[in-house]
Length: 400
Image (cartoon, rainbow, N blue to C red; front, top):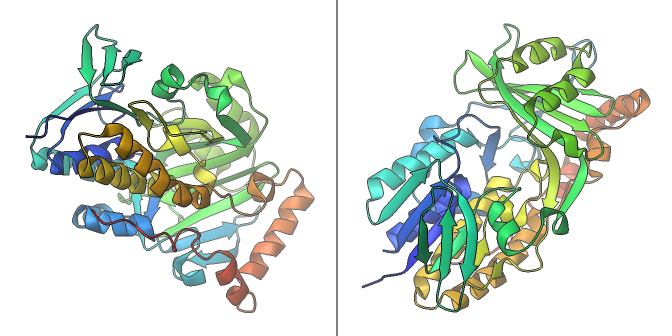
């Protein structure tokens, strides 16, 4: 009988994908999630290439199909709200910013949680709990929780996000592994403007910024999506008032729907704000502790690959552990060997990074509009298809 017991820190997409696959392999799982309930909302995420294949193999697609967004593409607006370029989901061979399968992060997590409830098996899921201390030896990991409980596990997986406490406790301070990429992003829900074109994410570029409104599954609501170019500011970390002040100072008086977005921000139930950061680890594992998702290999939302890395990583980690549950170190070594080539490509930023996305000057914004018109013109589409071809499509997904 398989007696392996795995602790997963973090009840997001990475952690829940891993928990589901481990339970299916007959492995005992405990998940701790600091939040009191599942986190709602979040930005839209897409599935394509290897992540789409993993979703098919894991049986996620029926649930995803029920909750997926009706998004037909992105359109780009000038200062007066006039459309100067459109990028449909079919353009560039389906490798543009909008994909065939788009779903809100919270909805995708709900699909995973529902499958976990249906799966059965030895699952202990604890909300409002987190790790305070970790000690390990050659045979297991001793964990002290915020509740005061101390328990022993065969393995610990840190799937607790870009600011991972697991990573800090085992590998060291965040600044050893994090690189600030020059800006911040925010997402939150707002009422759908009456004149928002259904199915289209609409966005406006401003000096050192880009903001837009993206359709929700519920026609009555939409998502604000904001990218602002700025140096790292420690004062913004986990200070919602400072974060909203930062956004307000840069968007108030800006074109199009900026004032509506700012007005809705104060009342949003799901306001999210964080820096654009990349996480690079010299190794994903230390003894019987390993990292998954943004905790170990965040590329920032600018890559558009965060969800892909989370579920592909979870699939590979679960597969390797299920292959040799009695040899945790061997499974972790194979996990890292197999997933690293995929991660190296998935973390690549689009050309120019935030400097190209958010030029500082008005002249740079105008030049960006000219460039976007050219990229979406018939003459340039064949060239663009080659440039944006899926960087991870050649990854051979292991079968378990």
